[in-house]
Length: 172
Ligand SMILES: [Zn+2]
Image (tube, rainbow, N blue to C red; front, side, top):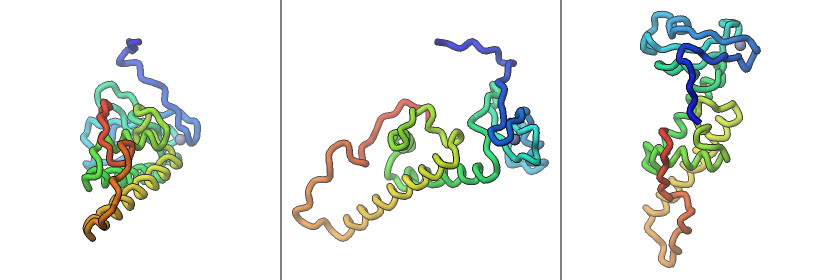
C-alpha cells in the first residue's frame, strides 16, 4: 500500500507528557543562536514549552517527526543508548546493521521500530543493559584468547551464536 500523503499536511503530534499539541519550530526556538543544528533543522516542540520540555526533531524534507517526543531526561538517556550501541560497532564486534538486527531480536521489536529515537525510558535502559552485557562478554572472550587457547577448547557454538553476521536490509 502506497501512502499518498499531501506533503503540506503535517501529522498532528501530541505531547506524550502533558497531552498538549506539539508545534513545528526551528532549532533556534530551542537552542537560540547556538549553532548545534543546521538552521533548517525543525523540531516538534510541545506547545507547553518551556514548562513542558518535550520535543523531537523532524525530517528536513517532509517534516514528519523522527521519533517520539522526549523530555530532557529521556533525551539524555537516548544519547547514552546511542553511545552504548555505537561502542559495539566501533569495537568491531558487529557491524552497525547487525547491531540493530541483534537488538530488534533481543527486544522482540520489528526492525522498523528499532530506532532509539522511538524508545521509551524502559527500552533505552534495556538496550544499554543488553549492549553492556554483550560488550562485557566480548571483552571476556578476547581476554581468554589473549591468554592462549587452552587445548581441548570446543568450537564455539553454532551459527546462532552472537558472532553471526546478519545481512540486514534496514536502512540503519
Ligand atoms: Zn508537553
